[in-house]
Image (cartoon, rainbow, N blue to C red; front, side, top):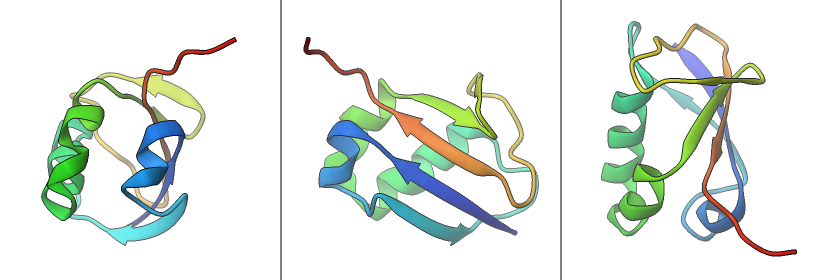
Length: 80
């Protein structure tokens, strides 16, 4: 199934800002992070501390990703 991934802050150094990917049905957020980490192992540390939003709602690691979801990966940021 297809989902859209939006990457912010430090993750823009590792992935496109916006991409559509194909994942399996019943994929959860934790599996998605693992999948992305395999695509770019340098991003694993940032992925591990990032929060995830599905269709503009912050979700937990066990959340199942629905088809055609818009997923935002939000690493911690600082600044003022």
